[in-house]
Image (cartoon, rainbow over all chains, first blue to last red; front, side, top):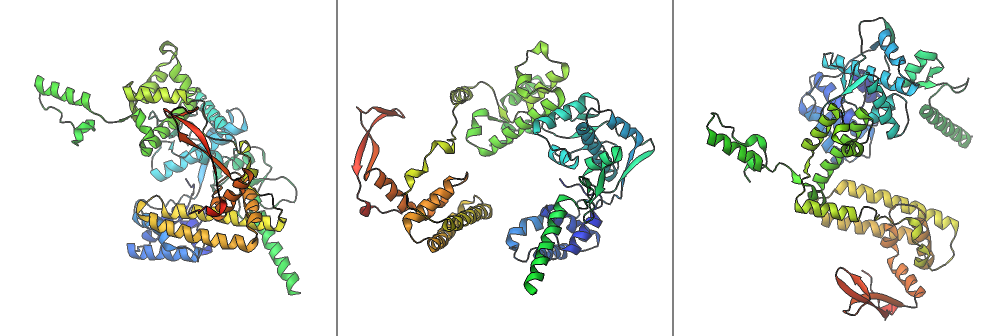
Length: 249
Length: 271
């Protein structure tokens, strides 16, 4: 499940760059909602989505995208776009996070708090339930470990009274019990990526923002400017540029 | 089939306290077959999917909440369990998507599972020697690399076909025709890289059997050469089992004996 704070800004950026993203079905569904909010009809939304797909992938076969486009058009009026500018994390919540043993547990709990507050804002209540897969939560928390250890971390959080679960056996919903809005703001989250790194940066520093994409990354050397993905892209662009310059001369 | 045979909520609840109506209602509820029995996970893939999904979710939940695996929890004695653990097991049994009562077919199924518990259907790649498929003809590194790219492209193409056509039987003829045209294309490309059929066969076997994954490319492109190589190595003799009451090989309740046959390679026709 994707975690986007402000879907309107996000989709406008993707449309401008003609990039369909890593999860095309989600991108199309958000774009359909965006067009619906602008007063477009079903037929026009469908045409615009197909046009967007072709412009992102000129060799795409529209017949293979039909199901995704139809699903997006159908769900255009299901809910409004999420437009959350920032999420405020309070001192009390940071204290509750710091009570956990080890930075892995702390990062995971911090991520869960952010997700719970986000869901509270979009749902308009204080239920503090989240329904993301563990893989998504741990990915956002920048914790890369085995599924056995993931389960161990969740159990430790449960035993510490930080989270609880749905009584329905087949449900993976988690309720975060340490959300506390009645406190001073300690940290404001405006970037939904690398939440674990943002927490560690707040705790002890040593992290920088990638100059190309803005993601929070651990600084491994004094000269580092980009995250691994952006560094590869820039390196590839520079190689191509050097190649063209050398063949031109 | 009437809905109240398989759906609890479709049974008409009695509106008054008439004893006969209440008794009939309770009788209908006892007869409801709202779940398929356990052994049907081997007949209906969707039932197996739901069952495995439930087991995985319950297993995860057991670790998250109790710090124990589901098997440990289920094997514990009742007096060792907390109230919440007992409730969890109760919900686990009630919400199980298949019926796990000890009916005859379920018990047979469990016996068979127990018998095959330690049998793995997977043969490790090291247990098969692919040199029996080869002729030993030398080839160049360049040819090997070119064929390797073709094999990878072939695997990608097969995956795309599988995704595009799905499992709809109405598309099977179209899919078969398309597969044939894909195979002919790769055959031409492979022969363009190396036109010596014996060397080409050796290259393709080496490329496919040095990696994990499908070996379909061998059997799409050079099946005749592979058979020829195997016959050469066995002096053109093939051995196969035939039904024989006095045979020494027992299988499926019958006995077989091995019979040898000399094969003329020129007379083989491979479809």
